[in-house]
Amino acid sequence: MMSRAALVSIARRAATKAAKPSSTSLRSAQSAVGCNAIRLFATNSPGLPDSVKRVGESFAFPNEHPGMNYEFNWSLNADGVTPLKGSAFRITKPLELKVAGLTPSSSSSSKIRAASASEMPEAGSPELSFEIFDEVAQRTKDLLSSSDALYVPEGHVPGSRVGVRIITNSATIAPSLLAYLDRAPKSKPSSQPITAYVLSGAGEEFAGYAIEEVDIQGEAKSVATVVVVGRDEPSLEKIVAGLGTSVAGLVAGEG
Image (tube, rainbow, N blue to C red; front, side, top):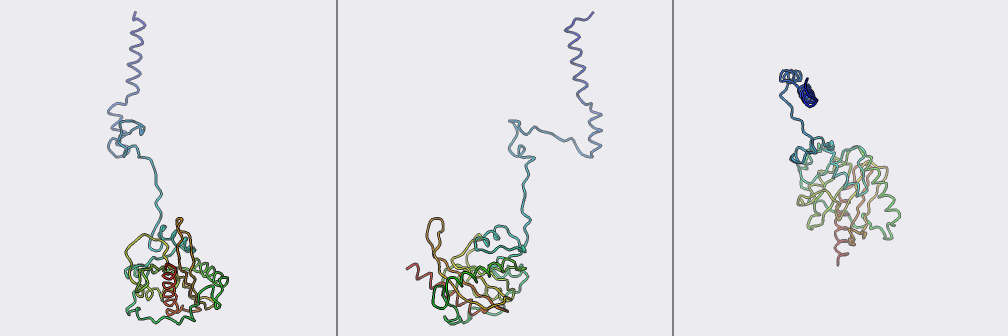
């Protein structure tokens, strides 16, 4: 008769053999899935490289496309405009006009003559109160937000190094505005010292600008806001006048 220890040893060997798949069964399983052997790892094993340990993590990437750039949209939101239709094009060079489905301007816009100062009053002056300016500016931002598409030429005001962002729903004047601006060095989307809100197809005509002081990361900075609204297409001359007077106001504020 076998000893108790011998019986236990035989039982353990039988259990181990039953748990281990045969080479035939393993090849059958591989054939069933149509692939080679799959190596499975415990991702908490201390000997595995980080690249393997990261298997199983998932990342959600934004569904971006021309006209839908999340970083750019967030920067527009900081300027009070939220593209509700999801179509906003940042335009810093002629190629980006084409991406937006627009045709670059064939004529020079540098010769646009600015409108007279009386046609571009400053908020806080006898001609334009802050209350009226703020009311029209907010209404303009809201209407731009709900536009089917937004075109946002960016650059420097000619003859200066002052950055400007023009937010408009007009596909007609956007190429001319880009041609007017001096090209600025490439940078991440961000608010500029001058922001112009230009709305076409409105039920009113309006033009005005304001110089304000804001807190940017604990430092007081002067910024300018230009608002030009047209029943049909906004006046390029008034937009140019607003940019020019804004630069002058910002420079004076720094002095």
